[in-house]
Amino acid sequence: MEQRPGMESFLTEKTMAAVVYDVAIVGGGPAGYTAAIRAAEYGLKVALIEKDGNLGGTCLHVGCIPTKALLFSAEIWEHFQHAAEYGIRFGAEGIGAPTLDWAAVQRRKNAIIARHAKGLDFLMKKHKIARIEGFGRLTGPAQGGIHAVQVASGEATSQIKAKNVILATGSEAKMLPGLEADDRILTNIEILAIEELPKSLIVVGAGAVGMEFSSIFRSFGAEVTMVEFLPRVVAFEDEEISKELTRLFKKRGIDVNTGARVEKVEKTAAGVKVSFTGANGKMQIKEAEKLLVAVGRAPRTANIGVEKTRIELEGGLIKVNQAQETAEPGVFAIGDIVAGLPQLAHVGAMSGMIAAAKIAGRAYRPVRLDRIPGCVYTEPQIGSVGLTEAQAREQGYAVKVGKFPFAGNSKATILGSHDGFVKIVADAKYGEILGVHIIGPQATELIAEAVAVLELEGTVEEMMFTIHAHPTLAESLLDAYGAVEGMAINA
View 1 (tube, rainbow, N blue to C red):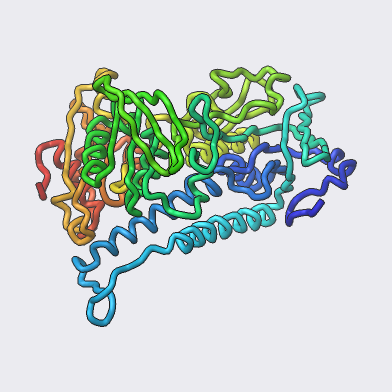
View 2 (view 1 turned 30 degrees about the vertical axis):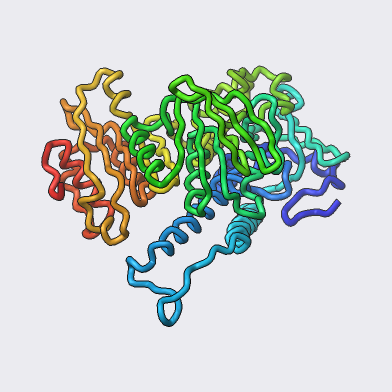
């Protein structure tokens, strides 16, 4: 068996069995590799077990990173369609039009993935983390305070011993009942590898994944139909954000169907045919070259040995305390497999840092659900943190709301991106900012300020007197803070 750089060899099983690590981590995605690096930084002896050839997990290889690479190419392509507005013409006489090279788009995406996968290999070496390739599973409770993890790679097996184990096995895309992924019925994995752009696409599911792929392929010229069972798109966002994104998607020519139930999926000579019941109760039939199923993700907790321990499951997810500890002493769970945590890479990474700190006896702060930024990288983007207006009212707050449209922001004018707004949800009594919801240009970057504000329990008054540089998109936040008190400058 070929030995990858930094990977322990199965040929030295006796040697490996003699080593006792401070922590063995099962899963090399954002949660797992972050936990490994932080544990190594604390001076712990770390083993990282990953079943795939490369580190990075779903996020790096078939999720966050490749999707955003395609979204950026889509954004550039959209700008090229309106190049004349920016004083840019093609050819010496302004004759000709840009053409899209899909193969080149895919090559760039793949190069980005490869670069960061190599970067993770480097970080493992830098921090002297033992990287072990294979499928890891618990063998049962600890014996004498030492846990054993069986690692299978092909026909070879070995056993890793550690004082602590962190489970970080991630999640996988759910599929509609009775369907299997192929060249026409796709999940996030298959759609990222298509060799030709489809002329038409049906997307089932209007969460972040469904919305982002709909945005990508509409930008590239595909006819896109969306079918969502829930009454609104991105249902986890503030209701006004959902409403605005629906409006803007429809403005882009995307057929958005909410409150709709898929009844039947059939393959045709040219692609697929989807029959669904709309919100009005009437049956509709849509045909397209491809169907993307984006109806959520399922945790990978099967066959990892949890049944041999005291670990408690809830709908296939692992229950943990604030330190990411399971009910089995010395076993932690982080990332997408944890009950009660959103399946987001940055949440997985932070939960990994918390587990590493607990194991190392260092200080940590538990994850707070109301401090987690949510980002949707559509056009326009969404960034949000904290309570929605409805949630704040449900929790008994007397609520004051401020909204500022990007139409009044000079940098948005420069960028030619006027759609959307910033919404501030604040406590009327003390002025504490409870939630910030943004839809518009660079919303996924702008939300970082809001996360810090909530973490520091900032008030509307404090933020109204916090200087923001001009001209910037960030000034839209300053105006939104002022809008809470009816004093936005630019609206």
